[in-house]
Image (cartoon, rainbow, N blue to C red; front, side):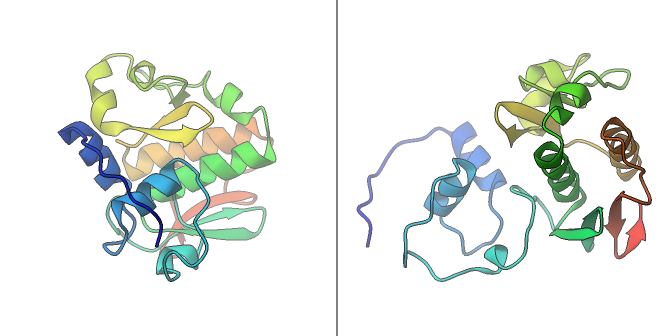
Length: 178
């Protein structure tokens, strides 16, 4: 067994760790290792269902059966937020300038992605505390979105990458395109 060290954390840090939970069986250490992108020690824990399918890093609630299709490749997610995150990460992998371009896009009061949580919310920066989630490499995305808002942003993302939503890129809930 690995050596463990007890640390003190405040309520906000604990809430952030819990927000990252995928499965009830995950320990806080498992969550932090995943969020910090640390390797899993060999034989530390048996494989979980989360390791068997590609899912979003931080799904909150299981709502529907979500799938992201990108050029015929299907990726599973457990929530709308998870599907949106998977889409952004996959487009970033395939198109290295994508997030920089996507950061220039915004709605009336919100940026689509940003380098700081508070700059996502132009009209209400306080929303960042509850709804800004790290995407990786210093990027943050908004998770307080309706299905229609995610669909709109997915269409913009596809266009920026020279892809067609509905043909090259799709987000599906129970195999129905949003």
